[in-house]
Amino acid sequence: AELASIAVKPVRTRYAQQVRNNLIFGFGRGAGEPASPLYSLDLGVTEAVESSALVQVGTDQDEPTAGSVTLTAGYTLTDAKTGAVIAVGKRAITSSFDRPRQEFASYRAQIDAENRAARELAEALQLSIAQDLARHGKTAS
Image 1 (tube, rainbow, N blue to C red):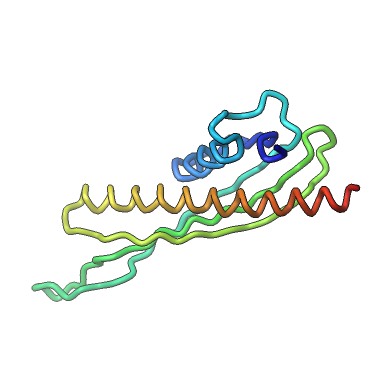
Image 2: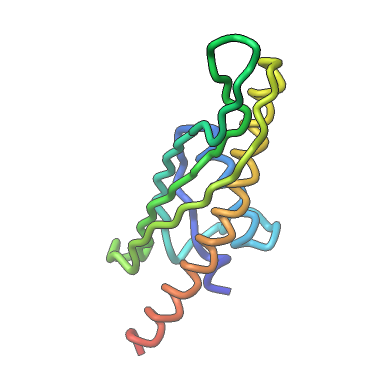
């Protein structure tokens, strides 16, 4: 029930918005954002895209054939009324993808990998924040 009372602050990038949307859906079990939140979550998401494998082609250049997307999220959970920091944490998820020679297909594969990483990162954050709230509840009592 406490997870459903967390408001997630707006973010700036497409992949961060994917993480935010998945978090809001997970916290509220599909009900959306709370009308009167008890907690506020400040989320910062960064992305790193790397080539994971190279293959020798007919020319003297190596072409990347696989890549990986790593999304890293740092978060600060605060009490909405007092502004007191309840928890600070960081989580990261990596998702791999194939890089075909066709440019659009390669770009689309990277976007799909970002979306997968965003879903998994939101699940990891949800679990971490639930643990933070459980610890906070025990210390506040």
